[in-house]
Amino acid sequence: MYTVPKLDDYSPAALDAAVRELLVALDSESKAVSNESDWKNLRDRWMARKSGILTQINDLWLKAAPAPAKREVGQRVNQLKSRVEQIIDAAQGRLKAARPLESQRLDITLPGIRRPIGAEHPVIKALNEIVSVFKAMGYSVSEGPEIETDYYNFEALNFPPNHPARDTQDTLFIAGQQSKPLRDRLLLRTHTSPVQIRTMEKLAPPIRVVIPGKVHRNDAPDASHSPMFHQVEGLAVDTNITFCDLKGTLDHAMKALFGSSVRTRFQPSFFPFTEPSAEVAISCIFCGGKGCRTCKQGGWIELLGCGMVDPNVFEFVRNNGYDPAKVSGFAFGMGADRIALLKYGVDDIQLFFQGDVRFLAQFA
Ligand code: DAH
Image (cartoon, rainbow, N blue to C red):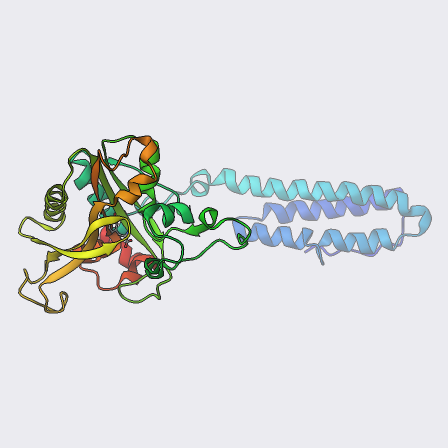
């Protein structure tokens, strides 16, 4: 095997002889290469930065040369470098050319790249189902901002400043707004009801609209509470809309969502923006109303709030055709997450928001 000799004769003839000897050696080493690992050894032996033969030549020939010979030696060392690279490249080329099939080997039995198909999130699925039940009754769909002003979220819904009904809807306010009038301050909306006002500002009666969306409240998370959740709001305004229309609409919607054997129960309640207001419960879908753990033995599951639009609310949009002496309407709001929990038999609302694929994949 070739080893780099020390030079003591720096005449051009002696240098040429040393170069020739080196190239002859490299030539025969490169011809002996018969596979990829031989070739790598060859490459490292000659070209490794730290102690390859080219590096040794740099040290033993060029650095050691006396000043007057440096030019001659330098030229040859430079030429050698590119020559050596060429020869080693050529050796690799020969290897590949000799095995065209090997270098293009393709294992068609390897598994392909799997691209898993996403699934609709269960809450979105529930939102869509609820919305489509109302679409089938001729409702249109609308949306509104999640960052809302105090005016739309509270004031125009007949929650006056400091009214105790605001307490149940504590939320996050956007910071640094103390200099603004209360009604202009921004907050994360606590319900989808503000979109009732936004819709009535845009569209004159008659209207029938459902509004799905995300809402926020200062609620500690547990199995049935989340500080962020989803609602579907509904609003119908026309002449001569009565509580009967409200009852019939919601009774039908609950049957469409939970099955035709489900019954509904309306109980008096309070919301500032409806009068009268009611809380709607459905007969327990797990025990049929006999009483079980889910309905806490009561046979009923409370599901949504509703009522007849309060005339005070119409006053805020009177100019757009909502004269409370001429029109009437009903509104309702339901929690989509709660409906998803019931429909899909999930026992902890937190599962919806943890993003665990093992959970979500079950809805694919
Ligand atoms: N916005 C109410 C809440 O989040 C729910 C609600 C009750 C909406 C009655 C309505 C309604 O439209 O009429 O608690």
